[in-house]
Image (tube, rainbow, N blue to C red; front, side, top):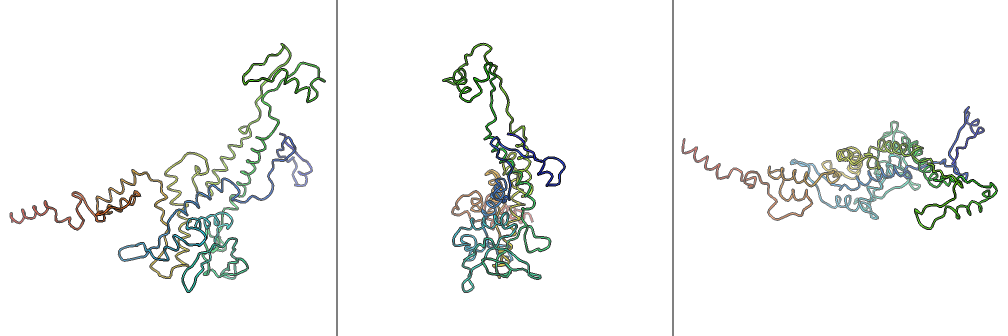
Length: 397
């Protein structure tokens, strides 16, 4: 491995000094030219997969505002969006495509075409490679030679552009230098690990130079004196015949590759708002993970649910909601403690508490009960001790 420097290239670039890059022993350069897509960077792909997997794991609820509060609606439209939004995939795959497109190739944008028949929703077709072009104060969506108005497609936006608020912006600019550095580090590591000039032992021979000048002479010497049949077998050589020295070859730690990669991974995690341990840096932190769900995951989920509500629903009292409760990192002890506290206070039925823990419902557990005798909430005033106290007060009067 050697460092190659060129003066002519430096003069062409207008620099006064030398430029250099690492080259292998076979003369192949380890410099990585060309453009690198975000999704081709393993660290970015890991962050994107984590976000897309989290968002796509949430169920989509169709909710309705009522005087008693918001209730979940289970009808054909709710089933279509949550179970089978696109005929060729499931809901998880469909949502995952939207998120991955926004974070990578779509540069903050993803488009879906609603297909209807006689006013009924048939399909929500993904529109890969669709683009949005400004037209006056509005814009049109170009896809496969056709133009669509903004209200004809679902346009999911991440990080609105400052000039055109209807268009999203991704992480391409922020991560351009970081991904280039990560790819260069991977190429350097690969070239370094496959390098031939890294002997662990040097043998200095006291002999006639011509005898060891050729490859066959050196091989014969190794076979005669240094080759052994078993591992760990000692060498038997004549005194003063040779001098054996052990050397330490240049390592990746000497090149600071690992430190640079760790720093770049943390930068990717910071830019994409994911915990660093999802990219293999640091240890798992439950609080950091739950904060990631509340912020990063819910930010994208909110953009999706608002676009679905705006474009697919006519009723002003209904809306779509992605449910994040199953994503939070809670232990069974935490869930059971909350369920028990709500159950004994009459705020949750027994079957609701069992549902929190992933258990099937049981008969006669659909009533609200309260301490201290676990009687139905409507009979709280019929306790025997209360009746006796009332009778006693009447007698004393």
